Length: 337
Length: 287
Image (tube, rainbow over all chains, first blue to last red; front, side):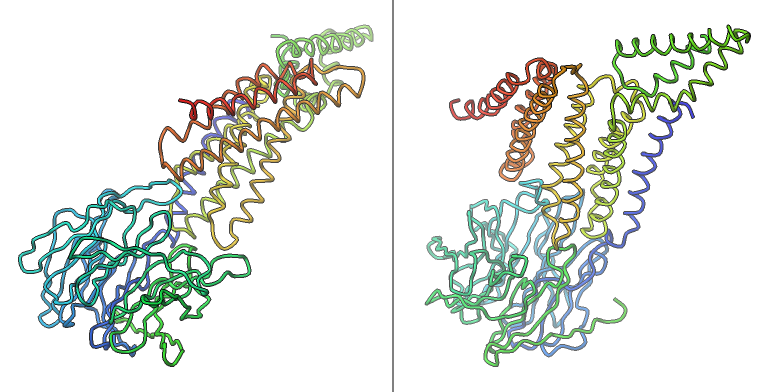
């Protein structure tokens, strides 16, 4: 074979290799959308029902299941390419607010929706091309507070694109009038909660280190802190949840290291008065988020069994703080999904 | 073109020698073949038969060329093949691993990886054209090494110890690049001092000067990586590459100087490396 032919053959071969690899990767199961339970759940005010998202090939529907586990019921299913995520119960348990999330031209959108459990009527609360990421009911159930991001980009190319430029907004459910509460343009804001007295908003952010912030709706002042305690190895925390009485916070924090020195995230609870944090779970798996029951001294904990290794593999566990035990919340999804 | 010239051209196609060296080889081959041809003519063969017999005695041109290449530039072509093929294999394995396990198609990365790897393999295939441009080869392998170094930082983010295999693979590949660059630099210059002590000093000087380049590369990648984390995608993060480019340009002229003044060139190389590293930092601090 002449040198010219060798060069041409080689270059054609490389082009084939590129497209061949591309083709194989397209057939890879991994490139399909995520299928599995969503991270965030919420417990009804009477502690009897759990609302959660379940993804099927990248699209999440909302389901409800008794807190005792068993057969889940499909609550609402989005159109293809959209997901219903981060659901929250209203204080009377009659409504569930959630985020409708989708992507267009690699840009994410998130709008606020609400479903009435009795009538099954769904209401669109916002529809202006926003990127709303989370929502929380006010104690009286007339208003909602939500987190909205203004930017979606990779501040660093080693991190994937993420929402940034966060602020808190308020919406009157009746008039649908939206008001901007904060003007912070925060790098990150998650886990928005309204305190039981309705006077403050709690959220998680990152300002050189992880912080939990309480924002007063009365005087617009904010107090922040980073939890510490003997059971907390590092000040890296995520997914803080406020207890129903507003006295405690549970969050995912670094409680230990495994044999390779990798952080082990467990559920940590902090008393807001004493500010002491102590470990409340012992999964030795990645605790992703936590939700308090309203009357029982229990939580539902989301555990990721496939942390930092591709798609997550979430499971829900009930952690009884009085009995000091943890049992899996077994969920049977409807077969047709 | 005569049959002898065709034969010699075929031999030379397998050798990476620069122009003057090629002419010397051509002359030498021609004289040996002519001598053999004359011998067979005296033996009573016709001119045509004598030419044929002389060329047959010399052996198959392709094989002779390869042997000469190996004798003059041992392992260099093989190293290029090895680096290119290993880099292509790495590209395929890493890309598929990323797609199947991290559920993301990094096609732009794959395109870069395969392009650089292909360039190296094309150099190996076309060694007689490209091999004589030692600095071009040096620059290509230097970029390959920097790209592989960047990839070490990328694979470090993989979880579950999955990064260990890829890191070891990349370190071995970078090692091969370094061996090639050292040998390429050394073989590019006409090193003919009689004393083995002097030859050792020249080799030592090449190694040290390459180490300066590697340290600069490590520093540049470190700052570039830091910039990507802190600033994100911006032209500013490319600033650390300026000292690297300056060093590469400097090395073009330094390559031959090392062979002539090995000891002085260590000091010159060190001074220049420090200068190109410190200058941008000083500019950033004072302006």
